[in-house]
Image (cartoon, rainbow, N blue to C red; front, side, top):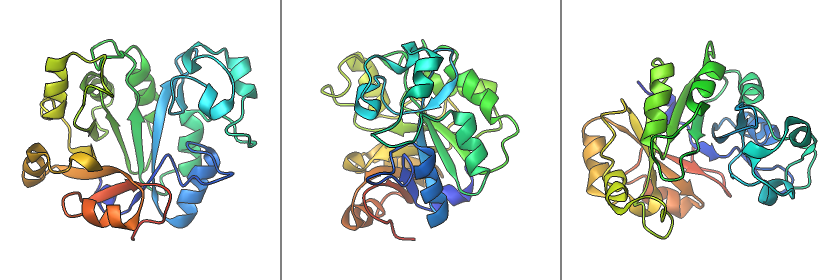
Length: 249
């Protein structure tokens, strides 16, 4: 089950990042720890399949380099820095070593199939391998339920959830319409053994969200960017993933 701290300690979106402190960096993790907040991070695979803490599929926005992160060789990747700082692209193991159980860590594994389908590759197993023996509050989620099913098979002791939203066509054009409807209805929740969702703040009036909370599911909300948005989200959600301000705590 989900550690109760995930429902009581606000969670920084990609760490407590700010100008000069890049998202998903070790510096952003340190800042979150110092402030006493939880940390949400994103996982993409490196060229050898090693889990890296990085949001985008392409390198350009965060490093200025061209190409896809999964297709970049290790030597090139080691030389890249985030958003003009001295911060490197961290591995998940480096992130875990830094956090060391001091604050809750919410890990989102990015979809590798392109359509939230079953082609998840080795990434869920590699994340499970990295988490083996980790002593601290941790949970894993993904927009792709297949990713979570594969991860849970590899690490049945780690709480899992689904990252969820309305799955509109504009943002999810590669997902077949019928599958978008299933995802928007959070139809896979029970099948993957989820204990929580992290739901888009703009879709919290989805009746399925209310029904899940009534049934005992943990309800988080993303991405909150002001105190007013936080107050609105907390009418339904128990906790928030936030950025750009200091959440109530």
